[in-house]
Length: 108
Image (cartoon, rainbow, N blue to C red; front, side, top):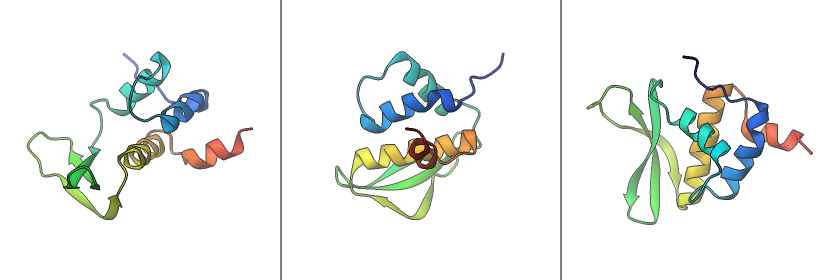
């Protein structure tokens, strides 16, 4: 079975996520998120709580269960929504090879 491939046709759903990272998502955006969160990664981005409710660090969860979470040096967030947006953009780049901010800026 072929995996869903994210394309430029999914840019409206990227905008939807960036506008509201937490909460209800449309079925089309959920399809994109399911692909991004799927099992076929060598690692997954995660948030490491540094200070409860106020500071997070970007981490990488290995594909193998029980492996160590690797903290990404120098990448911290003071806002959970900004952290979720950044991870979405990183996953988008990893799956498509495209910079999401650049793609969105070239659209009218």
